[in-house]
Amino acid sequence: MTKVFERPKALCDVELHYCPGCTHGIIHRLVAEVIDELGIEGQTVGVASVGCSVFSYNYFACDMEQAAHGRAPAVATGIKRALPERVVFTYQGDGDLAAIGTAETVHAASRGENITVIFVNNAIYGMTGGQMAPTTLEGQITQTTPYGRDVKKQGHPVRVCELLSQTGGAAYLARTAVDTVPNIKKTKAAIKKAFEYQLAGKGFSLVEVLSTCPTNWGLSPQEALQWLRDNMMPFYPLGVYKDIEEGKGNEK
Image 1 (cartoon, rainbow, N blue to C red):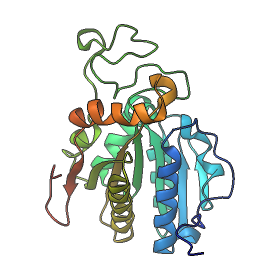
Image 2: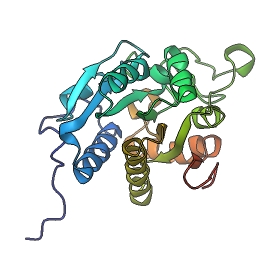
Image 3: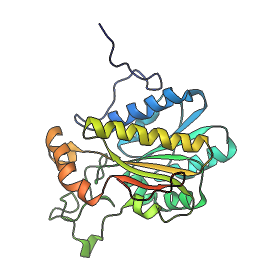
Image 4: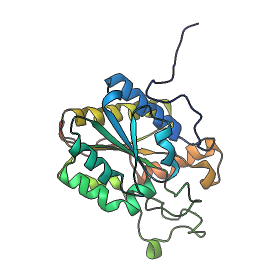
């Protein structure tokens, strides 16, 4: 038989803990494939966040460090500055990165820290039970917004790529999704470019990946993918929001 797929060497051969239909596993695979293709497993250090991805240190074969909630960019900054020859990435959800970790994220980008951030945006707090996150959409029902997010009471959703595009130190910012095979391929290409920019010393890079949370959205995996397309993509347009090499900004 012709082999059409094999597990990336940078991804451990263990069972993932994620809920059925969760797209974290796809994103893990893409990061691991990029590490394999670039041949950097031995020099890569990942920083795990707090949230659904808290156990990512069990899944990547490279060195991993656990950070306190929201502090992954700060921990990654310390590792990169102490060991500049290492390739350092963080793996974070929207609650971790855009709520408690807002300051760490914004200032790491502003300083142009030469790290790569993988940002998984599913518009909700997943691990803690489905509360409203900074990225929760207007009108979206969560455990803490049972009547839908009211911007007059809870404020507007945070668009991370748009926000960080205004920082001087950001070298590459892209928003992608993993709802279809073409989008999965684009996500992998974006992750690879982000790592390549770090290897070239260009500065801060972030790839925001629109993801699903069937459990806390109260939908089937297939319904969740469609909900993402119908609701998240219009508010969070896919595209490149900054690319200092190609002079791009907010191009799909």
